[in-house]
Length: 257
Image 1: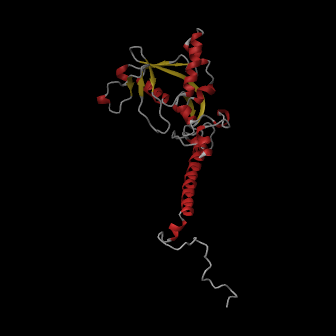
Image 2: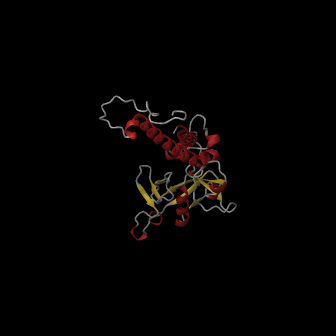
Image 3: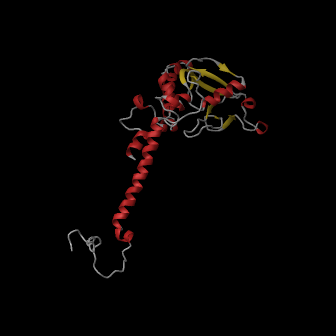
């Protein structure tokens, strides 16, 4: 349990530089908060949004991407894990979505163990303002109806904006996965389906063994403590017999004639 826990949750001996982020840093928005803190610090120094986002290191932005979650492939990869989302080529920048009323909208991020997730955009108060509906006939908040636009700050698309609904929806789907990166899928024929990581399999394997060992200890402890019960000794036996003392009784040894 200890080795499984320290591998999954992280410890002082599993730094991000060597092991990559843990899934809890994604779940809690750890890097997202740090990025926003730096952007707000830049704005406080009278920098523009574009300048503030351009100062965010690519590495920090990359940590704030679901693919570096150990449940989705992790930071360091080989083999089939690369066949998931592909090879990161560059940061496209931070997308800021707005509706026609001027509300800034935030895309709800996909939780760790989901493969797909509905695209929902909320405002700063958590009120749903836009989405990509499952049934267009019943939709009230579709990108087309709400008039959502997206503008990029920092990265390769710095200063670029889109109001075409198809393009806005494309980037909204990608924003579910954190910061948006250009990914090379051609080189390794990547299919876009996330795999777990060695860190994930290590944790799963050791947690499984730990459970087997745990119940094994319970079983063998019970066998020892209740040996007379397992052996079928009558609990109402009056004679004072210590179980196992006379095990050789009745056995004719060689030489006894």
